[in-house]
Image (cartoon, rainbow, N blue to C red; front, side, top):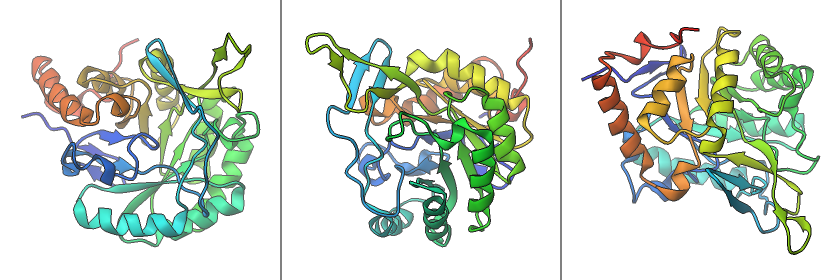
Length: 303
């Protein structure tokens, strides 16, 4: 059997499959459909200090080969999520990643410190790239200087590995990636959703209350793959690729352009046990292509 393990430098995962934040609830919702222990790691839905209702409906709009969402990072708040994580940590050995949100830099640091102190939490993912909050879709990850300042601040408040989640809507995502690395990020994850617009022709209005929404799914895969490839060539820290992954073959493509692991999201909405199928496909594809380990092909795209 091929070696599916991946080394992030600060943590070794049994395989590269990680459900993406916002598409896998708080883990427990998916336990009826699959054994959570088969995953390389899992990322919980993004969390602020206090509970948030999120954006008003409608929140989802299907597109050809994709999904627009404007959830607005609804969540129960840090106190409630700590209780959820204690239960989840007792139910699985899979590393738990908390996706940290904040309305300002101070809240990012405060929330990160809360969850970094929990033994059940293996690492944090800093969500500085969600487009579905007010401010017209503008987020810290669109500014390399803000990214540097924020990552530096959060790192000073935690003693666990920090993954920084980047936005495809940045003018220069490589510059942002370098800033995150220089500020102390242990890894990067990219990309979050692309800004898109859905129109209600009858009402002659945007579908979403926030006008713009985030596009994910197979439609964005070629765009995301390109950005992951570009960033992987310019940074020294591990990159976790994401964007439209629905198959084992997709996983191998992301590894080939340089990703150390992958996150898969939209597919979880239509196929809750997608990880089981993708893992089986990954093993089969590696056998077919005579790949003995993921390390063997990581970053080996020939151009």
